[in-house]
Image 1 (spheres, helix red, strand yellow):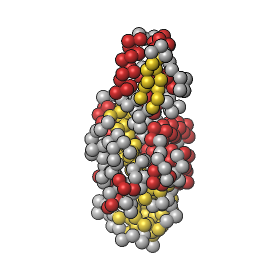
Image 2 (image 1 turned 120 degrees about the vertical axis):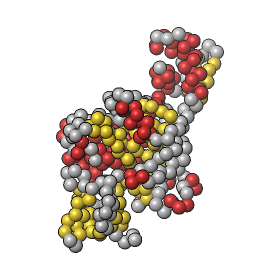
Image 3 (image 1 turned 45 degrees about the horizontal axis):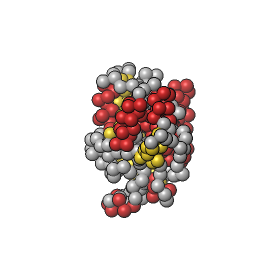
Image 4 (image 1 turned 30 degrees about the vertical axis):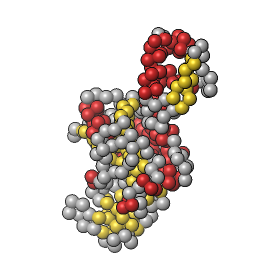
Length: 328
């Protein structure tokens, strides 16, 4: 209902909408309209009221509120249900609980601050409050097998890059799931899954994006490795528009997978890759030895193919970390 009221308030531009008109169009009482207006004000919306004129929307808050994000969505599934919080420990943990309880497909869990944020290989994630986009999306992809789950990480990375480029940031993907600008990290993606032998119960891609963090806000110890969209673009980024662009791209890619499989997504991933064609150092995990070589391709499962002096090696997502060859 709050979203419907906001849509009516946006139509006249700088004009007013009477409470009576809102009540009539939405089929509620004027008292109910007033209560919803009060809730919107408490959420941060600046709404002016004048006797005999009605209400006028003067200013929207810089918050990732569901009503604001939905205004820019053209999806049918992704983001039709949005669970917003000012702060939480982990959107992935929240999303997994919701998925286990039967939350709708495409439900987005989003927050302004994550107290227990972490990425792949349990690395920490830094994002000041009200400056980033921290969200997780609940998916029930019954059209793919569990072994194809790692490809959803690649798909999410493509969606993020599409949205970043729409905002003017020419980002690229470092295998498998880091989004970089000029060698510095903008985004981390952590995909988690609950599955049986031949059936995926749910997949939850968690996405953390440094959007409007300033250089001064970045801890000195990460400034050489991390950046933000604002720093890259040279100006603040509209977080709501960026979030909606990302969710729109995610649904477009999921529809593509349903129709044509993952091949088109993988090709787009390769087009955005900053890893392929580069000399890399693969740092072994789980007793795998370190080695160097040239990253030449990803196979149909999303594994990285590296040509070394000892032949081509296949590197699995989650098993290794990649660094430029010259970095020790």
